[in-house]
Image (tube, rainbow, N blue to C red; front, side):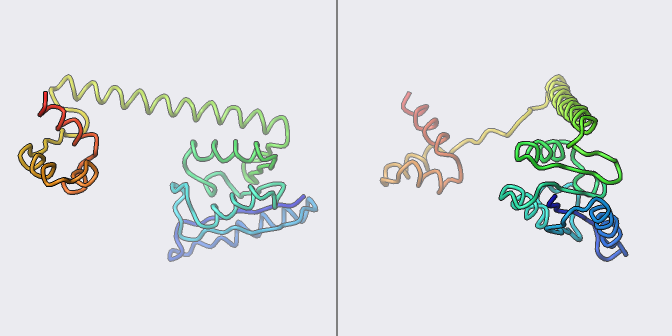
Length: 194
């Protein structure tokens, strides 16, 4: 089996070294008789970022079918966001690539691993629903207290708008000049002629 191993440390200046992770991952591959086709190591990269140089390279190689499985040391080395993890696992699954976490003993090639993936997916959906509910409650609370919710409305200077239009500027040019959207220019012009 062709394996890509991924390791990550958050900082490079506080003595963190990815070599501990890599050593254990290499030993695991050797015991299983797996061929390591790539080592992807992000140093000084936060796990909260969905986009990291070596992780991006790993995903690109997965899409090119250069590997059969991805082996990580622990979930938190791959990412801190449950949503990111679930999306990545779903992408690996759609590509037919196994995903194995050494310390959590999660192997998506096994029935137990697939069950765990289902549980993780359900938890991610639950987390999204909770966030959505908290946002709605927060908005309702702000409105109940009399606060405006959302962006402040932009009011355009009608005289300036008419002046730019009479100079022959297009809607797009006016929007760029005034620093607003074309739809707002259209709306304001329509209100002036109504």
